[in-house]
Figure 1 (tube, protein in one colour):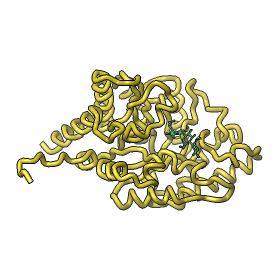
Figure 2 (figure 1 turned 90 degrees about the vertical axis):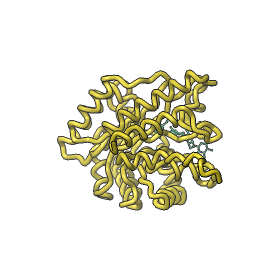
Figure 3 (figure 1 turned 60 degrees about the vertical axis):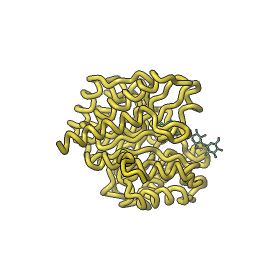
Figure 4 (figure 1 turned 30 degrees about the vertical axis):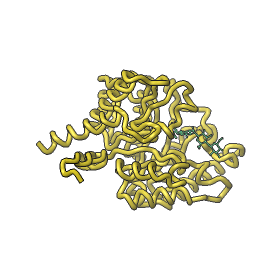
Length: 332
Ligand code: G3I
């Protein structure tokens, strides 16, 4: 072997660990359960925190009343343990991806309370000590800054379900970090103001909430602004930690080199911010081969750091260089 061969560059996780930072990705069900070799090898090599894209949602875990199918989520927990990776749990309470047997029932308040408590304590209890952080409540505030009143849980329980969900999760695993997670709330807006007030009031009531997830599903051209710092500072002042939980930067297809470079700059700025203000940065998937975006945002895609062939894009190199520079600063 040529002894001048380029030493393999350390993966993202090796650099992140030297910064005491968590960098990760959401795991797509199909390539993971099929054990797709390139997919699983990259997942183990590059990341020190994982989250299930769909495997731990209510519809995936409990397809029938009082029945749970743990096969997929147990496989992910085992994979993360085998590769010394932390796990984020996503998500306990959400208005989407509820199983048909639940969302089609008309429940009394008491029945809704019992079902929600049982689900949270069953799931969090099973993975007690194995899940680092849970997205306990996802997307409870609508884009206007009001409660999402159409949510199944709001319709049955009013706003009470928020505090109860966090309390039940804390009872089931006192050591898990409990997050509120939402989208389009990174800057200063009526929505992020409402989330700030909600979390301020819940914390004041003694509700066990530890962190806020900024999903960061971004459109090309996104750049960091002072409003992001101001929002982070007011949330941190509540005693909450911050994580970027679902980042992707969608591009109009097919992207040209300038678009890919612009995407890389979005990733670089987000990670540079996260290294100063956040516990973790996770992307929602890691390869353009498996991304929610093309089917949900037609005409856009190519949103992730690796392309469909698992080749690193400029966005990956931007993440790598940002972490390497921080390691250099820390160990100068
Ligand atoms: O499991 C069924 C399968 O049985 C069926 O054959 C197939 C075709 O109908 O659908 C499968 O369910 C799909 C599910 O993903 C699992 O693949 C749903 O149709 C599809 O709507 C669902 O999309 C997910 C979406 O949440 C649902 O809103 C995406 O994969 C997932 O990436 C996305 O993730 C959300 C986060 O949880 C919360 N933040 C926003 C983010 C993007 O929407």
